Length: 439
Ligand code: UGA
Image (cartoon, rainbow, N blue to C red; front, side, top):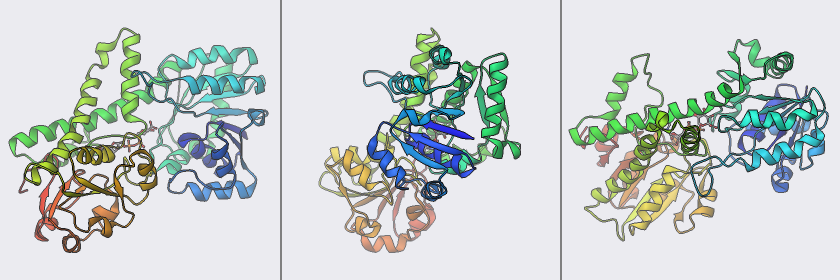
């Protein structure tokens, strides 16, 4: 099937390459000429496991190409819209400039019967407004939210745990549903749940899912705060409540909290939209979720200060991690870098290392020192803080070896990802998040 994908950022580039990998004929379109040049040359513009391979294969097979010209979308049966919806500069609401611009630029190239499938995360009500815009062309608008996780984006796109489509009522909606089933034929053949619903539900499924995940993380981080005042261990608490299948252990990782390009801005946009709808009180708890989350970054920096007897001024602090999570070079709203910047602001000599995200981090926070090699970064540290749980630190860093490199054997585990017993046995003073000092 011929497909176009408008917007070749994180979502769009992965979607275009993944759709080509399952046999579709795909053109990816973006206004950023440099990005398109890189993609067309078979170079992934960001780090995402597996993307480079399917990009190269797609280009080589002739099933995947990229363009800056919206006219190249003409003739596709389905046009996916996957542009960004960032937080507005002067508020919490989502900025829909790019979504509107993409649909406006696409409209002259649509044919009657085409499907325009929105994938961006948008405030509820957006799809209905876009459907009106598109209606004069005879194309049908559907809302098909994306649930991929960075670091697993290719896998999640090809093999999602569910598909959701918000469609209009009547024959146009039925026809659109049939076409989407063809697009996602490989997932549907594996009995992936395919939920067909209205626009508002489809839009809300996405924000509700992210709000739930963010709430789960802040819940366990709130328990970490209580644990810190009572001597309890939040990791054992999470294990114990996680055994209840109704709760589940995933997303109960206490630490420096959530970041990235999705959860923080999505809960804020949801709050802003609920206010507009006169339902602010229904999601008032999301403000608390946000506040708890931001407090944990402050707490992590404070743990380093306390461990260094009340001041980090002039001390060498090595920060292990910069990406907002492992398997990614994404530093958008990264809790890891936030902690690093705070420590720098308190007068520490901060050295940051990360397997993938250093170049991005340096562009945004040039005041910090960056070192590619982990051992070199550890050399002479008075304290070490782990802020992104890459295997490179979590599993592959031998505490006995690390102890030979540093000046002071103090480690703050901002992700509760190290084995405290092993680090203590190697002579380190270990500080976790929401864990007693001597657990
Ligand atoms: C999130 C959702 O998980 C995806 O389903 C969704 O499609 C995506 O947003 C999106 O809206 O595009 P992502 O931002 O890639 O995906 O990252 P997550 O794996 O959700 O992690 C988000 C943050 O939460 C990270 O900073 C991570 O370190 C943190 N986290 C995660 C915790 O602090 N504790 C946990 O237990 C789990």
